[in-house]
Length: 245
Image (cartoon, rainbow, N blue to C red; front, top):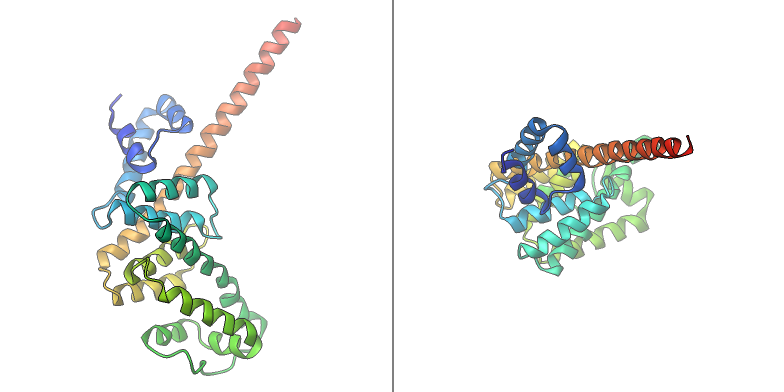
């Protein structure tokens, strides 16, 4: 068997897990093709290893994903790639914003929204926000004034942080928005445009979206682990029956 699949898996995850070992033994051709598929989507020249791991952390720690094993893996690999604890913490804090999307989409369903937008939403970013989510800002301000003020205060705090540069910050939010479990395309569009405003290239935006392909490896982890557990339980049952007979 070629060493290539194992090398790709080490690049992607830092290890060859028991589930992948089982796949390599059970279907080497698929393991080779699928590891190449993942590797070409994730390990790209557009990002440094530090950036890549922070972007993947934003995906895995998002409220729509919450992949515990993935979060631990990405934190460890981000730090090993040169990220600081402050950078890791900032990614985690930024990812908490994803939980507001239920309100962003639900508010127009729950109440008739006013025209216009709050006086403090000024600038190109808020122009794009209003075009994508008309009346949502004003609706929050009028219907949930205490929450709206807390939301603006929290956003102002996070956007003042310097640990993560603005370009990468926006790309982090693109990846979280485009997670297969979320697919919040309107929000992703907003952050794609803002990322480019902050200096990201189109190639970097495309590469950030491609990172979401990595989530497919969980199918291998869960599926092969389940197959092995059921097979082992079946064998154990057969052994017990044989001993009884």
